[in-house]
Picture 1 (cartoon, helix red, strand yellow):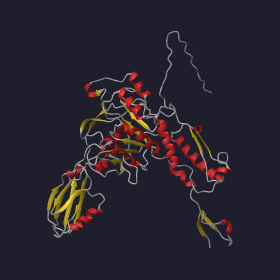
Picture 2 (picture 1 turned 90 degrees about the vertical axis):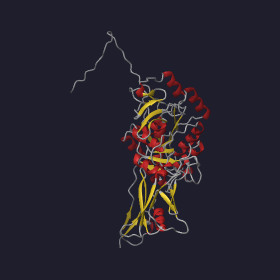
Picture 3 (picture 1 turned 45 degrees about the horizontal axis):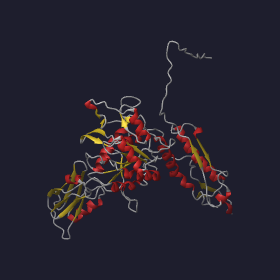
Picture 4 (picture 1 turned 120 degrees about the vertical axis):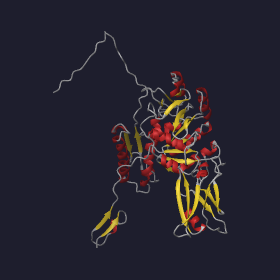
Length: 497
């Protein structure tokens, strides 16, 4: 009888009975799908939500549901998400941090304590109402509601049953604590109080711990982020730690200096920190004015504008000269509505760029709009200082990392070498077709006996050498103009055949 076999399950060298043997093989993988190059890992504060836990956010609706209303703070997650979305970002992993003095709101109803599920001032707006059923009078319904976080309802004949229903709801707004002597249900209402956000987290709380339980920045490990922002954190002591984390995780970390900074101090702070790392983009502390739809005109750090811009750009693109949305002024220029026209001189820009510090300003090379002016990271190496180097290197490395591990454990032979080459070449070819790489001449892959001698393969080593040429960024555009009445103009006429 004919049988079906999965590839590898049938030993074809030991067949005895003549028959038909069908082996089902998996489709060959010719290329790897590119990883996300626009996912932003964002660490900040909020009035609601789990602490030190990555939360998936794709819209302002998601942010409001997870973290409550926006707050007028430079560290606020909701404000940062709002700004980044306006620049084109659509994918976030948000981590809420606190200074440890935050508290959960509470309320008591007939001896049962209702505690907000999360700490923060948003819990103070939660109302809980217990109503008796009109048809089945032994049934009661507890409704918890919040103008931003929504409403939830739970029905039961005892407090124990209602508390169990609340516990089973992963989106519940409260936790019910029923005393050992269960009180009777009785209609009533209570508004929770006592919730507090706490103060501004310290640098250590933003950075967090990288142990069994990861907190702060380290909670972003393994989240597939391409960009990292510790919103509003300006301490230069954090910059090198951000750089190390960015290199480990393939994140382009966007840092910034303190509000109202001077160029001299910015250069000194960077030098003092010892920051020289292609994984960190440092924005000058010329903070931007933003007209928030909830909190009005406020100063915000420039880093979230940059991260949002990258969130909507493919990895070969630089931030240089890309128009930003929602900027209504800066500390140096003032509010646009005031008519102030103070701008950066070439000498000021040169001092920043030579130090590896970028800035958002107006005008830009393309016109009178707000844009990132340098398109650089903090590396002092001319070969690696551009945004595109960091983003392309991380993108290609993470794409390879996402799928090539499937070859581990395979027998080392010419078939394996050929399969590895096919996948890598197919992946790079796809990058050409999407414009990420310039041409098929921009890459090469070697994986054969020339770079895998038997002395190494006998020990289990296989090596693939991949070379990729990135597309350059037009940073210094020179147009040679020759004019005058004595100029002889040569023209070439092409005759159609």
